Every structure is written in structure tokens, then in C-alpha cells.
Image (cartoon, rainbow, N blue to C red):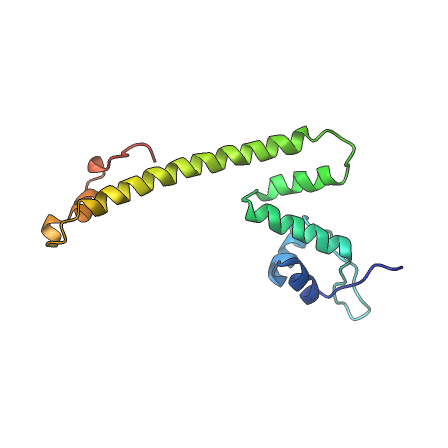
Length: 143
């Protein structure tokens, strides 16, 4: 049975990837250029939709385009070791953990600023004072 064919609009709906983003992924080589109909319209198959869903999910998890390109290439040769995919995921995990630590410090600083606010006048405002003098910031130098 021949592969079902989808227009770019249908591919966007089915994969959750917007039409301009699909065109962009084609432009940068994450998605191979699809065949065209006699009228010049793009025609996508089920494999293209699966690839778009893979890319969308990887982007949602914060993987960079180059990492996604590598993961897609790995996916095409399933008999090889998954060490490279594991290394990419571990690298992303380290980035996420670093970001969480930074956001945790940011939250603590904002809580300290808000708790120090006396709800009086701007001249006595702890929020304004700390923002004006980074040296008063509790996590000075850690961000």
C-alpha cells in the first residue's frame, strides 16, 4: 500500500510543527526536501511526519539543532551503539541542571528582595536598592 501523502498544512497539524518551521527545517537539512506535486506543492509521507514529531520533541527538551541532526543520523543506523546519543543526552542534562541551579539562586534573590520590601516609599525600597547596587545582591558573582 502506498505511503499516505500530506500537504504541508496537514503535516503541520499532524506533527505539531508550524508551517514556517517545517520550511526552515527543510532549509537547514533537518528534514529532507519532499517531493512536489505537479502543481509544485510539497508532499509529505508518514516518515516525514514521524521525523517532524521527533524534531519537535527534541526541541521541546531543549536540544540544539546540531544535536538533533546527530540524533537523527544515529536513528537511521539502529544497530550501532547508543553511546553517542547517551553523551548528547547527558550533556543536555548537565545544561539543565546548571540552569536549574541558576534559576534557584535567582528565585532566592528575588524572594530576599521581596521579603525586604517594607511597602513604604521608593527611597526606602529594598528592591530598588538591590537592583541599583549589584554588590548587595546575595548571589553576586554566581549568576
